[in-house]
Amino acid sequence: MKILYLNGADVEGGAAKAATRLLQGVNEHGADARLYVQRKYSDLPLVDGPRSLLGKTLGFARPTIEQLLFGISPKKVNGPFSAAFLPDGLSVQVCSMNPDIVHLHWVARMMRLETLRRLTVPIVWTLHDSWAFTGGCYLPGDCTRYRESCGACPVLGSARENDLSHWVWGRKEKAWHGLNLTIIAPSRWMAACARASSLLHNVSIEVIPNGVDVQRYKPVEKYAARERFSLPHDKKLILFGAKSATLDRNKGFHLYTEALRELTAIIKNDLVELVFFGSVEPDKLSNLGFKSHYLGWQNDDSTLSQLYSAADVFVLPSIQESLGYTVMEAMACGTPSVAFCQGGVPDLIDHQQNGYLAKPYEPSDLAQGIAWVLESDDRRKKLSFQARCKVKQEFALERIADRHLALYRDIMQ
Image 1 (cartoon, one colour):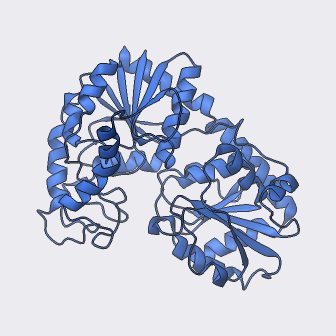
Image 2 (cartoon, one colour):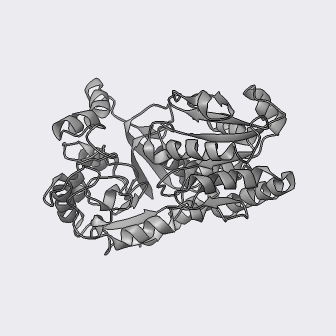
């Protein structure tokens, strides 16, 4: 059975991690799988990408060209948006690889959406965000217009019913119609959103979470982990980080800073220090009420495993997450997490059993949750044990790969 995975990149973001880990997992279980990406960074032998200079250049420039074409810029929109309009050569590439199944991951800026109709094999699509069932936005927030036909899009700041989002929705309605398509939602919440949408309500939808390699992401002795990053041994460490953690509003850095201000009234600031990892250092890191350490962007599995293990608690203040990859990784390393009860996060965190789910989007409750985890060493040890157990039982890569293979076999029957 030949599986071809498609994703925008191979090492950039949660979708890339999901795709590359799944690729390795299913191949270890007897499948013949490859990953084709628009932007190739790694030297992984099972990952292909554009080989010509022109193809590589277009792979990097394509998203920018489309944004310019439609006048979409960060200053004009309230979040990421893709019309997926520019032509691509994916159907030819897919045909040349002759797969039995094409499995899409994050492809919003990789393909023209009409390309799916040219694929003659069954399609599986893992939803890493909401783009597949909206008129172009990735994160609809409180907007539920995707249940009808989009238009008057709040992400575009539009009041017109017949706007760009409605046009993209109409193209998707035609392109998705009659496809041999199976949707994988990584969380119950994402599955419910897809089932309620006008574009995917008639499509088969399975809930299979993303997986994590629990042999790579595992507890590391805390003293050694802190030595690795020159972090103090006599402080409670609060960890926060993600790609574009301080720049992407959805990651909730503004809510985290409010929570830290609340936390200063609960915990003495000489007992706690903050640890950050992300792509850009925030301007006012020293004004958060606690001494802070900024470690820059980290993406290596071994490094991340040590970083999670060095912390006493991991905080995810995101506004909307399909599941929460960093929480899964932290829990695999035995580090309890505190997050808002939103999106797919409740599939990972069991409130006050292996972490803390704060009321959305109340910084004061986020602060209370952080304090609750930190105030008792015995409690934190129990949370740590339960967090690791939860991930091993439900999210271990081997188990997730098996579930995907079973789905592929069902589709091929």
